[in-house]
Image 1 (spheres, chains in turn green, red):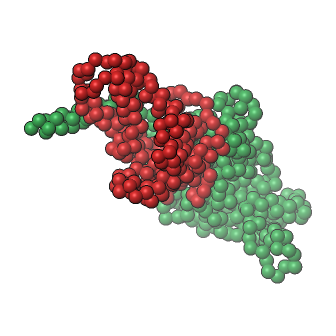
Image 2 (tube, protein in one colour):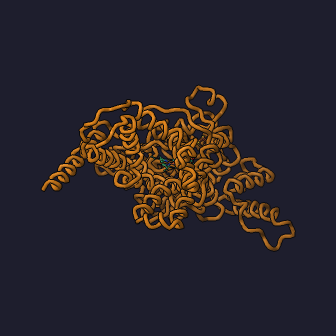
Image 3 (cartoon, chains in turn red, purple):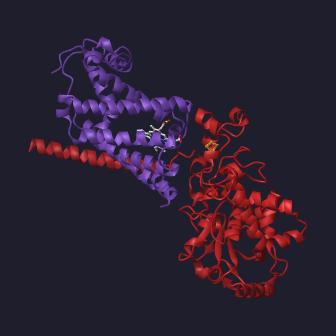
Length: 364
Length: 225
Ligand code: HEM
Ligand code: SF4
């Protein structure tokens, strides 16, 4: 890997200075960094000074910093996060970051295979010890001594711990890597875990989603590239910029929610008119993610916009959170007739017993 | 703290347990009352017992809420009458005609029904909450009521007030994150379910019994031994 700066690299790819600055602007927006405090020594009004300054700060960083090597590990995953990222339709941001990072190891994307790739990974981890970025996709099975998922004869846990050891930062992309995702769903046959439950002594940035929103992944990587630090995280280690508000907070159907206008089936009048999907099981109110603002496919749409309720895929345990099409307020379990019968029987027995005891007492 | 996980607990296992305790508790109360026995009817009825029951319920459903002055229920304690009425009206609207609550019934009973627009339900929720506040102030200021009130009365008030106020807070996204407010709402609902059978709030069930029995007695128009 050549130690070219990001800007030099982009220049050689035919990106003009103007395009470069524009892309920096996009990055700034994506990272939510226009909220930095205004700069004192500027003559511009504060709101201008703020934005402009950050763009140049970003540009400067990208002009001078070397590209960052990335090790991308896949465990119990479907490669959906990688797919989403590489097929993302928002060219500037994702392109910029993808060009800036050099992905050194990625099972789905690498052309090479077998021991050659593994040897290359080892070499990179040696050479860039303490500098590379580790991205993990998929959950880690601990059951059967890790036999459920092995690469090159080694268990996922083993590979993860080794790679984490020399990483400058660790990002878990997708719900599986962040919180265990689908593999961890009840009854969790492989005893799957998310990365942060294994690397308990390290900070793992979670970019959950199924898949993760590409811009959230790249925005977080961009933050690391530019500042060398991780963005501010919430209590589930998700970057606040992307996971700060709920889908419901930014939802385009929200006015219908407030007005009590709900679609009751997927093809009724309400559905056609774009009413709220709460009754069809929408989990937007408890789901923290940027789907409603960043959207998908370069801002084209997102599930709720296209008529499907939010599944809550950026929250822990969403597979076990009740039916996807069952209202958010519906209880998670419905008592079986047997349980109700048993409760009734207990009531009858205790009630009758007490009454009999009272009567006996009165007589006695 | 992972509030979504806590929410799953309060909506899941805890709610499940509370509901079963509620059912067992109500049945227990019912059986106890039923076992008190029904005195043998030794007098000849001079009127229709069934008619009495119908009248009794009509009085409860029509006269008391809509034309209370006939019985003087309004004149005696107007504040209590209005505040109590608003509370019950708001409560029923919220738990039967609010969309999220109808979905609870639907999942438990297997069928649903149309609901009212959120703003409408919301206003009635406010009415119920104000009604409750007025009632508690009244209870503290009225000398007689104050003497009659023990800890149980205040706890009853509190355990109904908590679900009301937390539901309102949740709907309006006040103070807490949504899942935090939701967890608190569920926690208070779960606790209320456990509390009801062993408190006077269980009147909602015995109300129907007492109305029926009184109706029978009125309708009979005979000397009750
Ligand atoms: C299993 C039982 C219950 C569940 C799952 C539940 C759930 C909910 C939900 C999801 C909301 C709406 C939040 C929103 O619109 O974003 C709500 C609102 C509310 N709930 Fe409940 N609730 C339950 C029982 C109760 C009970 C028993 C009471 C009253 C004693 C109550 C009082 C309220 C009130 C007052 C509101 C606010 C309504 C408004 O301002 O429009 N809830 N509840
Ligand atoms: S569709 Fe979902 S996220 Fe949108 S307003 Fe309705 S409940 Fe909220």
